[in-house]
Length: 156
Ligand SMILES: [Zn+2]
Image 1 (tube, helix red, strand yellow):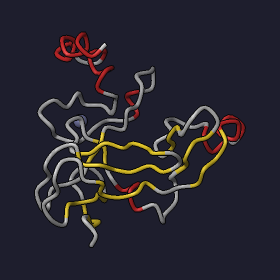
Image 2 (cartoon, helix red, strand yellow):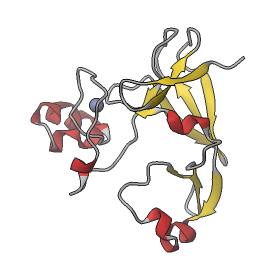
Image 3 (cartoon, protein in one colour):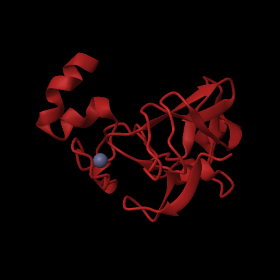
Image 4 (cartoon, helix red, strand yellow):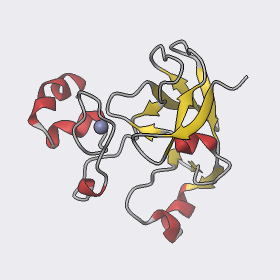
């Protein structure tokens, strides 16, 4: 049985929501896509623009491009206080719960965008208490807002 459903979201147009209570550590959905070589990523103009939202590193040679309508997991929104994480085993990538998630809660993960000069193109609407206002990975948020400085020292 599926653990998720697609629904209208407060963060973005659509999002994925828990269909029932989900325990921390549960694998919720596979993040599907096509395996491409990293040299293809460098060559293909499709991957030039802004941020590679749907692109995941598999290893030194390959990446996974999840920018396809059949990749349901691509509807998951970013949050600064996420309840899921994305990680891979071999050539497969899964979205896994990192907290106990209640039925009807929106599923989110940290998109992990690095901090660079165009971060302002990606405002964050996650409404988490620790939201820094932009979609930037947690280790870099102190660059945007000083209140994140302390935790960044611990992480780095
Ligand atoms: Zn946020």
